Each structure stands twice: as structure tokens, then as C-alpha cells.
Image (tube, rainbow, N blue to C red):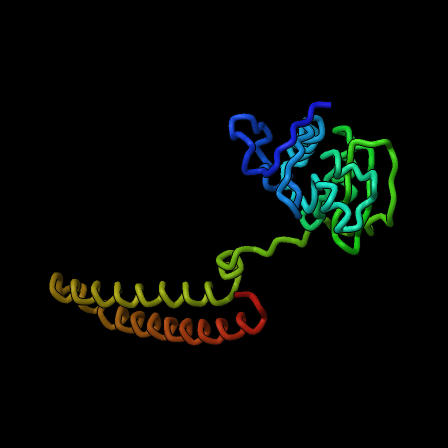
Length: 224
């Protein structure tokens, strides 16, 4: 077993630390700051992190003898050898986590569902505690971004209709003025354009009203 002891994790040379997803502070004793680097154990921890592809929140790793006594740890705890890790399950499915941990070579497993973590160590092979309850889904379903929900709401549709109608009414007004200034033969079309302009204005006003109503209704329904 390749191990190196440091009186404090601050003393670890940066050039010798080769586990990119963890820091000496995470692995050091929580009570004293002392650190025993167990290279085979850390290699497996890094392999587990790589396999899962998501962060491992280390609750406890190495424990100095005095800190182990203070927290009521077992007298022969693998934490004393730097060969055990307590990992939070807040961002992991416990069953998938255990399978991955066994695959990379961890042999000892302790289940602490009430405290929300799983103990893993290098062995011997054994397990204790009550397993975590099976989750229906590993994580909550993601909610659509607000702008996606808005695009499906009546608010967006109504405001779009109002905008198009407003632009149409403005366009008719311009066309009417152009016709009046160009060909007198086309002047008979002017009344029809005037009617069309008022129809589009009415559509725009209805769209604005629907937009206001739909915005309030969507808000109440939680769609925005």
C-alpha cells in the first residue's frame, strides 16, 4: 500500500496531487486537518468519479485517531487508513452509485439513508445498514424554460395577432395615401382600403384585450 502522511493538508505539494476532481482539503481529517494519502483508494475514488460523470460530495475520508474517537468511529475503521469515503447521495441514485463503486473495486459498503450518505471502502467485502429505498425516478423532471412555456401560451399568440394587425392597419394607411397621390383612376378603391384599415384596427384591439386576459390567466395557471 502506497501512503503518505502530512501533518496538515496545506503541506501537500501541488505537483504531487494527481486526482483532478478532488482536493487535499476534501480528503483530509475534518477534525484536525491531518491527511493520510492512500493512493490506491484515491485512484478508485477518481475512477468512480470518472465512471459516474458527476461530482462526488465527500462527507468524510481520512480520520486521525483522535478525531475518529471523538466521532465514535469503529476502532479499526478504514477511515484511519485513508481507505474509506462517505459519499452524499443527494445527487446520485444509490443503486447506480453502488453498482459503479463495485465495478471500480470498492468492497465494503455501509448504508445510511437517514443521514443521506453511503460508506465505501477497499474491503474486506462486507455491508451493513439498511439499504436506500428505491427511487421511482433518480431526479425531478426538468421544467421547460419560461420562454418555451410562454411560446405555447395564448399570451404569445394573442399579442402576435395584435402586432400583425397593427402593422397591417399602418400599411393600409400608407397604401391609401400613395393611391390618392398617384392615379385618380384608382381612387374608387380608397373606401375599401379605409374599411380594411378599420377592420385591422378592430382585430388589433381584440388581440390586445385577449393578450391582457391570457397573461393574467396564464399567470394563475403557472404557465409563466
